[in-house]
Each structure stands twice: as structure tokens, then as C-alpha cells.
Length: 184
Image 1 (tube, rainbow, N blue to C red):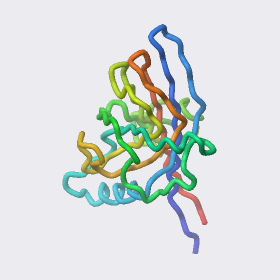
Image 2 (image 1 turned 135 degrees about the vertical axis):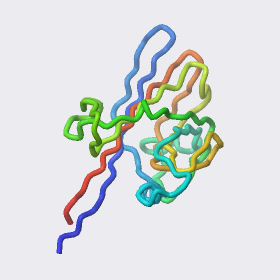
Image 3 (image 1 turned 90 degrees about the horizontal axis):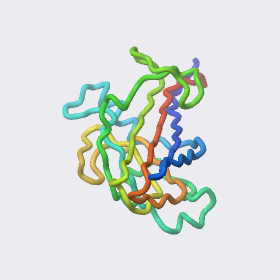
Image 4 (image 1 turned 45 degrees about the vertical axis):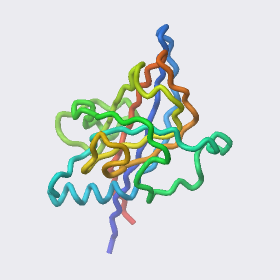
């Protein structure tokens, strides 16, 4: 009997734009899907009361010791964590910033689809006047998430190299989540 497994693959890319219009695009990197993402999927399939999909992005200052580690992140990164190490900012993501895209295209290249596909693209912009602090981590939150720190189901977690966010910089972040069935 063939077993089929659901894999959720996440990637992200940051683009920093300074006040002079200079653009610094970071490389595309993987992000880690958390176990609570599976609880959220199950809750959505059940039509659990007061449960919604992706609602917020949270940014964190992480841990200063990560700056000394390979790839600037703990190894391993526990996928059972339910909140950021040190959340410092949270912003709602309007549903218009979450779209279905062609899952066969390269990251960031898939055409937007008006009908559901197996890839979601989430885009968010952290404005010049937002989250002006040290940043080392981020996550998406859904379920019963609110604007309150650490609320909701943490879907993914990224620990990234240090970003010193100032009011001279806008941070654009693109995240894609692929839902893939794999025969085992």
C-alpha cells in the first residue's frame, strides 16, 4: 500500500529599500514550517469556530548568540515552538496580500491564479516607521491570532542574519508556501 505524505515547503526573500531608493535584494532562503501549522490545517478543515488562515506576520529580535552561529540560526531549530524567541513587532496581513500562484514556476515567478493552487504567496511591507529595531527572526500566525504578541498558531519560523531596521529602510518580504503530496 502506498503512503502519501503532505510536505509543506516554505521559502522567503527580503528586499531592503533605503530612503535614497537603493535596493538590496537578499538571496532566497528556506523557512521552517512548524507543527502548529498542521493543527491549523486540521482546524480549518473542521470549520473550527474562530479559526482563520494566515493573519499576521511577527518579527523578533531573536537571540544575540545566533550572530555567532553558522547561518545565524540555532541548529536545530525546533519545529515544535509555538512563538518567536523574542517577538518585537506584529502586523496584520490583509487577504489581498495572500494569493494563489502557479506552483510549477520558480520562487516569485509564478503567475497569480484566481482559482486555488497548491502554492500561496504572502507579501508584506514593513514601512520605514515600523519595527525599527534589531531583527533576527519572523513567523506567520493564523488560527485565533490577534494583534497581541505570541497569540495564534505559528505556521513557520525563520531565523535570519541580523537586520538593523531603521526609519531609513523599508523591508519587503515575500514568502511562498508549497503544499506537495509525496508518495512514500
